[in-house]
Amino acid sequence: MNVWWRTLLTILRAKTMLRRNGPVSPTSVGRIRLRTLPTDIDLLGHMNNGRYGSLFDLGRFDLLIRTGMWDLIDEKKWYAVVASETITFRKSLQLWQRFTVETRLAGHDEKSVYMIHRAVVKGEIYAEMLVRARFLRRAGGTVPLEELFEALHRPDDLPPLEPWVREWAAASALPSTKEPAPSVWD
Image (cartoon, rainbow, N blue to C red; front, side, top):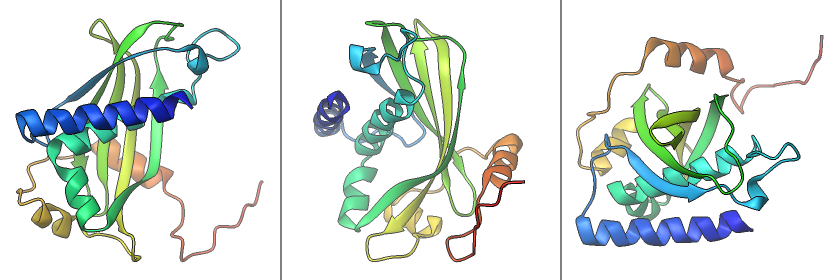
């Protein structure tokens, strides 16, 4: 339940910042301050590995709202879905520890937008997650990136993707939802 409260607070804070300061550049780094709560902790006494994704969602909400993209995609009846993600852990976050979620758009390919999320303590990376997301229409179908960029009235000024990101995306992809994907174990 605490992630619901954190989500509401993050959305309210981001909308307030958007009203006060105007939209930020899509290439900016979003930062939100959090603290590891008892509900985030696993049996080993540190942040549960599954909780990182939920807390990194807050960074995504914050950045999408403050860039102005949130209202636009809502108006167009679009939504973003995570297609794949990978996370690397370096250090453990402990109970009550303060940390910052840093979020940045990393680029795009022909179908997806990529974001990087970091859990940072005093300037040091504790964990980093790469997320590949796609935009879909509530009425069905995908939103081509050209249409997304046109709707944003922005040129495509995201940095080019690192080659390893393209390789990761290809290696981690599952078959299309229109193709069979049987679960067969060797």
